[in-house]
Length: 116
Image 1: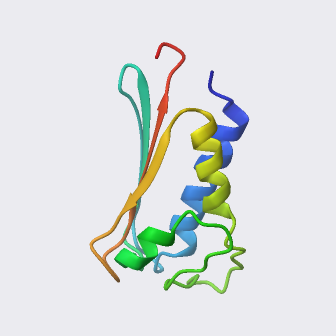
Image 2: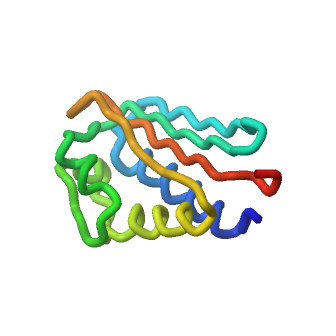
């Protein structure tokens, strides 16, 4: 069963990161699709992007990657680690894709619905 409060924590963190690491006046696309037995939540930004090394370390605690907040915001290095734990406790998966630095990033979260 989906814990709505925890799922909103996931949504808030991923959208917040997209804003935090995107350039001014860039676009962020957010999508939530019901895929039958799965919810698919995606956030695609036009921000700083990620290197392959960043992607490998993305969900580790206290990891700060090559991107830096564009508005001098604070980053603890814990948010995505916590998000991964929440998604895992729901039996879901989270991952990110990026074509590299300055090419944006897309985050994907798949969570089984109660029917699964």
